[in-house]
Amino acid sequence: MILRLRDIYGVTSLLATHRLQDGFALANFRFEEKTKKVVRERELRGEEEAGVTRFLVLRDGRVYFEGAPDELADSSDSYLQRFLV
Image (cartoon, rainbow, N blue to C red):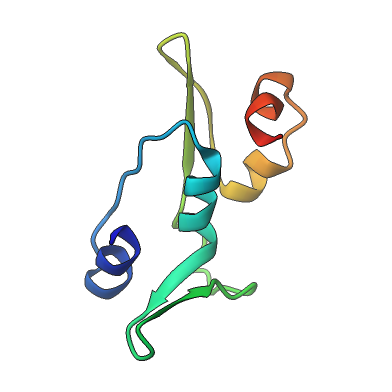
């Protein structure tokens, strides 16, 4: 449902979860209205779409990380790595 609202109506979506795979699903997939299917996001996006999905990780009530999905996935930070395994 979140994908459909975001991709068809341009609604900003916020997902609060401890399951990073749900966040990565939002970052990597789009709902295609024409086919009514969820499809993998194309690898090459225009500048206007770059940075659409952002991750925010909290730790002890403070922002610990903020960035793009690839920045999170490529992080070598030991705290963030615990969630990526």
